Image: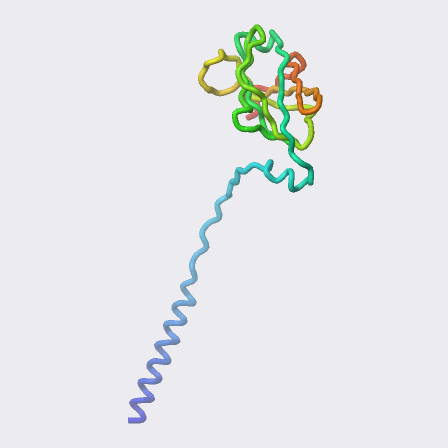
Length: 162
């Protein structure tokens, strides 16, 4: 009887070691790493990172007939020290000083230069691909920004960035 118990005990010990060896040999294969692309706005951290307070700035435009043509659609491109506020990032400027929309920005301080994406289009034109970047110097008076479109510089068209 002692031999039988010893045999059963040895059998279970060997079986347990065999199962443990199988589980340690079957290591999971690491999955191939995929590059992660993370797109997020850093603007929400600027105030915390700099210790400066946001203020709202509003922009007005001095049209340039050479640039406006039948109409000019501008979209503000977020960039330090400002980010666009809601509906205040799209502006249409037309002939005869007509305009639709208002530039509204939250800034840590008044910018000296801002960038827009632009395209020529009529007032009610659908949103479509823009032409390129427009880089404009800014004059400030308090919380008012003035952008003279005649002083803006056209950057390369988007197709030239490739």
